[in-house]
Length: 472
Image (cartoon, rainbow, N blue to C red):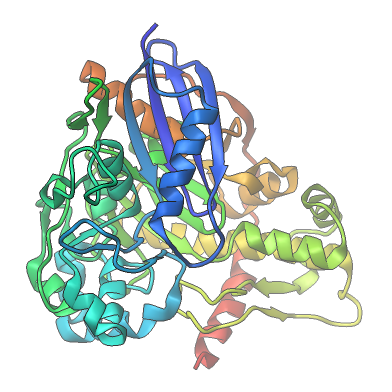
């Protein structure tokens, strides 16, 4: 039996899945928690990776591994390979003003043409621009910039600061893949090339950047002979993990909410709604992201003193549209639309409809409608949507499944809950061994095919437009 391993180094934790290369069966797995916060010392990821590998029984019999990770996080290294400051994560919005500076300097149309995206606070380029303004001494020390999965792969291969690694601080050995690089804001996924002019404006100089390793290629080979594949950004890894192909859209309900499609063509959206990312399979991965997804259910469940399942049961007692009650759930600001300082708003309340069941329904509808607006944007850009894979912790809730079908208006496939990003990374590891992506079965727990209720999205869109109109 040949074994391959996949890693998901996410915002909240590190998960390791070890699978049989031929059948795809999960042989063993492990996990470890990451610290909370929007900036994290990368050494905590390294410690968690080791703990998760140990919990999964080690890598001694594993032929290849690949690491998927949270996108955008800024890992800055000095010439000795030391981490200069805690990494700013994707959900750290302090670089919102820096994003505006980059857009103003290049122009929205030009930066979208160059990178496929208009930068927002999540992107690495904006965090480098923030670093240059807020911490100029640290900015001047930056010799290399990596993303979380790049840095972990580099360390796992044996590189790192002198005295804390086998191979030392060879910054030129850093490697990444095009899916994760496409989220930096200084990479052109059409040509697979970095954009020095963006880096120069953001950081003040052009540092060493990870080389691009294409799908199926090996990034590193360890001293023991284990292959390390190119890795992937978390969304691209998840698309591989559920088996999404062209015509499929994935809606992920995790800490953030994302809607992304595997597409044959690149998008260049100067409005900033669509991020023109790359997939892990060589296609495009146009993506819309919201900051507020499962945390909306967390908040409302806590308010009512119920579980997520009980919140769903309450929601299904209300009709579609919740008798006119609408929640625009910008609890933590928002990325799409780009309103980092906005707050959540409830509208449409009357004495007659101010009930627990309507508020519960409005919470689920608000969470999903924010993503439906993203789906509409993808369609308007020419992206084909024939079916939707609904994934993430909140996807197993029957009310979320039902309401998703009513809002999205296409068949909704709910895969068996699992480690989609880690499984996608394991598929990359298998490809490094065999040269082709494996075709592993995906278990489905539900298929939702119900009539679309246009009223839900229509009233949400009106409420969201009012928030936009009054945003400061």
